[in-house]
Amino acid sequence: MSERKVVDARDSFCPGPLMELIANIRLIEVGSELELLSKDKGSAEEVPAWLTKVGHQHISTEKRGDHWSIVVKRVK
Amino acid sequence: MSKHILVVGGGLAGTMVANGLCRRLGNELRAGQVQITLLGTSDRHLYQPALLFVPFGLAGEENLFRSQRQVLDRRVVFHVDPARQIEAVTKKVTTEAGRVFDYDYLILATGSRLMPETVPGMVEGAHWFYDLAGARKLRSALQAFTGGRIVVNINVPHKCPVAPLEMTLMLHDYLTKRGLIDRTTLTYTYPIGRLHALEPVAHWCKPVLEQRGIQSETFFNTEWIDPVNQRITSMEGVTLDYDLLITIPPHAGMEVVSTSNLGRGGWATTDPKTLLHTVHKEIFVIGDTTNIPISKAGSTAHFETETVIANITALIQEGCWSHDYDGKVFCFLETGMEEGTYTWFNYVTPPRLGPPSQMIHWFRLAYNRLYWLSVKGLL
Image (cartoon, rainbow over all chains, first blue to last red; front, top):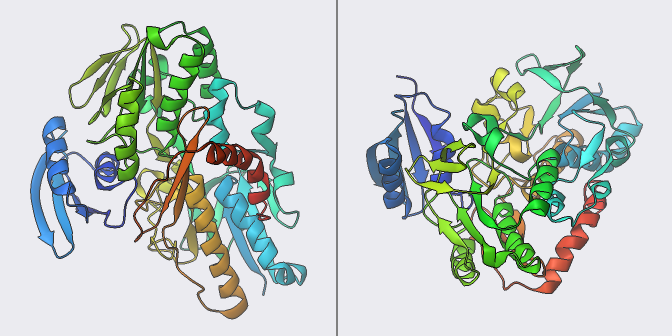
């Protein structure tokens, strides 16, 4: 598996964490993981909801101080 | 020994930074201590935000372009010769024509490009307005439109995040004035779970769209388009029928960035505060080219150039850093044909949206002309 890509969207009011995830998941290979960092509490619910809709895998969500770390896997 | 500043890209960001450096480094340029070269892709400079007005016949094409040579300070050495390869370790750039340039500072401002071909059926089945050919084609389609289903569809990533919403609201006014709105179903799709990336804009526009009878579909990322049966289907499993499809195609950065190992997808890996490339510290990255998670917009590029101009000037004149970029972005938002509003934000200040007014709308139209002073560094 290739190195996990980190997308730091903690200071992103626009386009925001989920838009960054959608843009960046296309840039990693199928089977690879991506870690999204977000200060937006909505990301912890919105990101897994979107992953379910499109069929990518939600690996984990972890609160780290002032932000969330959400790990996802591109599966198609 | 003379310092060579090489600017790769002749759009808003590259042009503005080259002109700004000329103004700040006048003495050094005169003494031959600094040389500034810009490599562009065209001898014409396009003011991209005015493309929004072209489909409605509100912007004459003569107002969209100026000669790139005339927009640039005469002290900038200018070549219409795009970069083909950037060797960051040896600090050399090879152009399409085979020229080789050494540099002390490289300013990477290659911008972004539309990639409709990455979505099956998009080239055949959709219209867009983010380039002149697309805006002209959409203008013809709107002039021929007599009613039906219009879908305004937004894909990720894209620049100028408010333009799709502006298009939708202006389109509603345009169709109302032509007496077609009662025969039209207008649907706006957005990739995430709300109607705009900017939360205040999303909250503001939800009742506005409802009042105007504009339907919306969130969590809509285009999977494919069937141009024969005029249907658009999302990755989330929703299919919409259309008679006229206006899309914002997904964007990518320029290939030279990827092939030079400066960043995936053509987006150069950039420190969000210094605007330096994360590996190569002689390379500044500005405008759409960065991978910073903020809006890709003209104002973003504008504010970034102010930081880069100050820092290169300080490094050359005083051997020190000036200041970091604070993430500032400013967006006008046309809320119809007669009114507009604006928002601004940075890395720590959340966006807020003021009430729309005719005055802001007129200022936006005035800025379409003031841009030519702004890009020269005079405003």
